[in-house]
Amino acid sequence: MFHRDFFKITALYTFGIVVTLGACWMMLGLALPDAKLDLLQTITSAFGINLPNNMPLDMSDEARLAAVVMIIAMMSIGLVILNVFFSAVITARFIRPRVDLVLSKRGVLSTVWNASMPYVLVRMSNFYPADLVDVSLNIALTVEETHVINGTPDTFRTYFTIEQFTPQRILVMEQKMPWSIAVPGDILLSNSKTRAYPFRPGKVIVDSIAKEGMKPATVKRSLQILIQGTDARSYSHFVIHKNIAIDEQDGQNYTLHLHRGVFKSLPLQISDAAQLEQYA
Image (tube, rainbow, N blue to C red; front, side, top):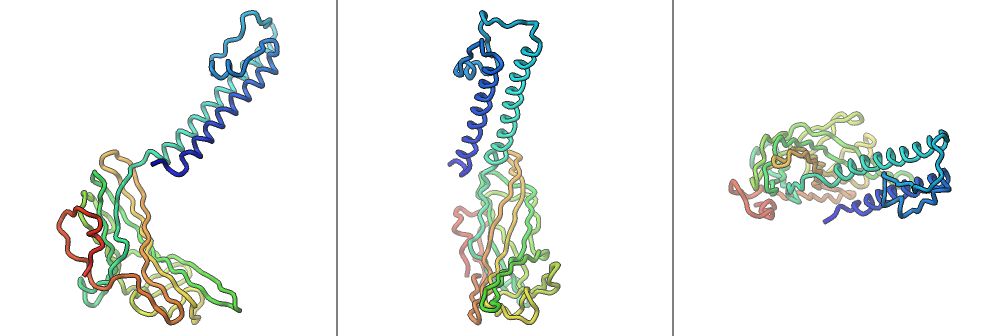
């Protein structure tokens, strides 16, 4: 299937070509009225415009000749710029690896690995028909709070970078091999505004990032996962963004979007992406 911007970019490219050729034809018509240039002739001949042999063009008329050369040069430069620009846009948007890196739709809140430290686990696997190399992960916690101030809701969103997770880098991600992303479920996070924000999924949220001592009306939290790497077959770089909902709270009503338990053990290679969702 085509990218959603494919037809838009193609239309802009075609419009630019038509406008450039049309402007060139109009300017040549003004500079050379005796030539009686035809628009179809100008378009079909493109850069090699053949002037009629019987046109009374005086070679001594340097200003006129300079105008003709300048017009043709402008058309050439304009078409080159259009071609380079749109070729770069098309290459950047469409010629890229179609990496099929699948993550589980929901995470698991587990204490199996360490009874004293819960972990948020997210399963992932490479279903692309080639290995992925030098895969790196970056994870941030998104917290969206809504406070009601003088009867008016005020929503505030902030990001906390998470550094204590594994794996942060995968040298080679083979095909259909399951991996587990493990994020500590009992840590303090900080950014430029908040120095010690407690991330403890599964427990009622009482701390506010907007104002200390205030109780938010609603809170929504999720993990933003950014995955980057290289396709070993085409040597093309890819970037994938995934969002995993953690929990939310509306007043005293707390909802955990994670499964409780543990992901089921899987073989070294799996055949179906649905296996990533299995948990116990």
